[in-house]
Image (tube, rainbow, N blue to C red; front, side, top):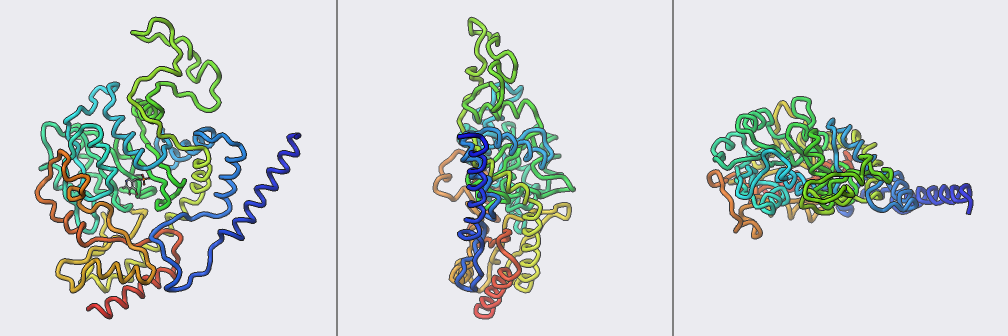
Length: 441
Ligand SMILES: Cc1ncc(COP(=O)(O)O)c(C=O)c1O
């Protein structure tokens, strides 16, 4: 087959894929009560499908040219020098934390060192702390923001404290000034779990750019999706190199998809390594205890198409949030509505609500009411993680009794603001709340 006939077939396939999208995927009309209003989901059109099929036709499969382009665009968007694509936000958290344990750092985290982290959040923010032999020290959250309470940092401190690892909960930026001040004063590493907060800013600075490392998730619920997927971002070249190695089997080599046989370093076969007798092939030099957590090129192709839409996605999330906030204000007697720092501009992941203690109904009553009307609800992840069966028995410390985290466990949930929802959907959600309060109060 000639190149031109292959190109012709390729074009026909891609045109058909776009036509297929219109027939098979394009959105269906909203039927109140029958259409399920997801809290989040994939928002895509023929461009993602075409990009994915192009990547399949090229059949690179593993992380290749598209993964590298995706990393570059992510780094540019966040405003940092390095982005490493990985296969989930949880993997990103694992890579970021493991990187801080590297023997190549001057002051690596050591087994038994303590990491301050909020008790409210997603389990895989905490899991890597435990998996790396470190001790989580749980602090309480503030109700309304559901972020770590900066006033709890000082009481959490001990002579083993070495790092802070926290999420910007549901896209709501942590009060970064006191947190970074605390970290600087005590020489602590900071990892920002930015999985829910792509595009959020604090003092006009993108979250994810304050700490030593930050993480992103591209699971479909998040601001952009690659199906499964995530990234680690950092401005520090050494941390980037270590994180890359941790992601890529522990190897030292940083060759990319089109590196020449003599390697990106230009001297692949001439590395003099103490303890290895002769010049060594750098591709097979292992300097970290690594994993393989890379993204595929097909996922990256979808991510590149999604990045083009990110500004519109963020605007839609903010618009939906604002409409819900206005519409739910009349029920503040019974519901704690979200709050955020006046220095923050959140790129919301979702709309959190806490049923106030003493309300004449429970969270369960309200979420069942909404779900029966086909409005999806979700709990604020693990609630108070110390109470989850998988985490009850881990070595840890807490600051006080974590009363707010317990309230979150009992009484907080969220509804969606994702770009798949429009004004008609939000009006339907608000009507369901109005009916509930008409009956329940
Ligand atoms: C704050 C936070 N961190 C980490 C993760 C894990 O991301 P993933 O589902 O891509 O593993 C999530 C998932 O939603 C999350 O919300």
